Image 1 (cartoon, one colour):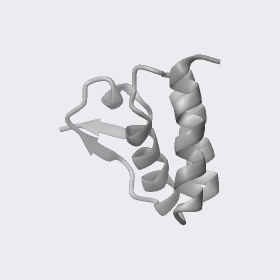
Image 2: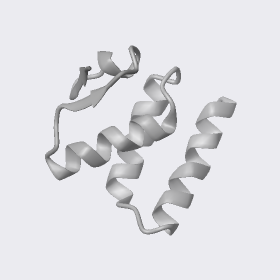
Image 3: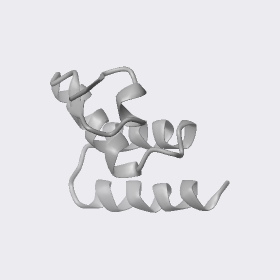
Image 4: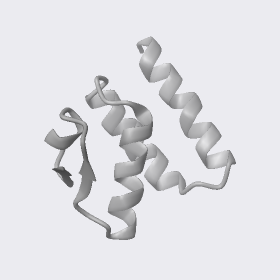
Length: 73
């Protein structure tokens, strides 16, 4: 497991402890692990938007815009 994946795991624990949805946090970690060039926070925003039914998520980020469920602004 690389350094980015370890940081993501700590971020998931912090997010869940802070009251965020555990399912969304774990889905964000899986996306982050599969696409480490994305930031974990971007992955988390996308998964929270997906869970809330607020897709597509608009983004200026070229890398994030390539992920299903997003739209480049």
